[in-house]
Image: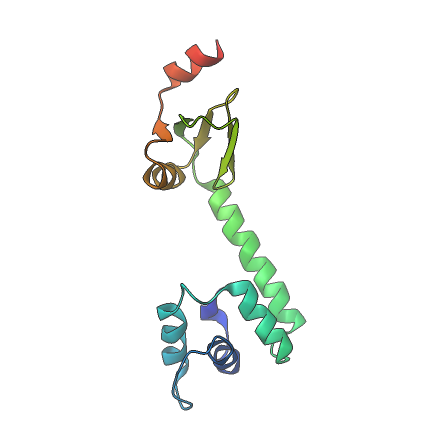
Length: 139
């Protein structure tokens, strides 16, 4: 689920719960903008806890959230995993973005977006690899 699907009372509870100063007469759009502007502070799981405490989170909301999460996972799983990354770190084992690298298995096939994120976050520890390198490594 996303904050964009919340109703006005739910958005109001979230901004109030996170201590974000928004006019009491703010529209839904203003509340959504306040949430977006404070995305570094507002956590979805914490927002749901606030909504539950205020009795603003229903079974229907829970079902919608599960449905949206499943759709997002299916969409992510459908993206092609066609980029090969190699771990150059000295760690025996290292996990990043759900991919597990080990000294015995330093290669992982992933989406282009994940590969870019990993190599940007740790350019010395991870590099793009060729299929030939992996074939030679695994023999």
